[in-house]
Image (cartoon, rainbow, N blue to C red; front, side, top):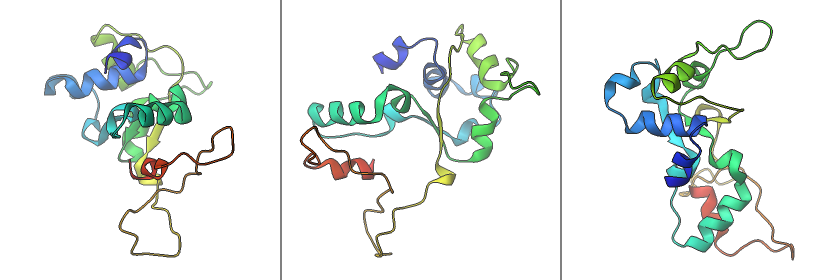
Length: 152
């Protein structure tokens, strides 16, 4: 949490504060109930080493990605003008301003409505893994127990 709060000028910091705030601040976002949080805070692994490997594999951009249940919530975060520039009057920017934060740079949004379970031909797979590639180390081996990433 400290690292996200340390990224004070990011969308991740705004979303983190939004989800920790009392309900009145959530009124700025129409679909606040469909925002789950930031990738870095949504999953848990057993060891610091595995957490570090997962963070390195995903990278900072994806670790700070905002996760939404629906496309409507993702679209509500930011709007664009006809010339392609960000509309600074969008809900997330207004919320950031009320919190005294200015969002700088781009940010990723992951919409769970668009993600489907990994299908390996077994429809009754109890783990319901996601279709993401296995990471490889420099020696081309997959880290032990990294399959847990699919469950997060």
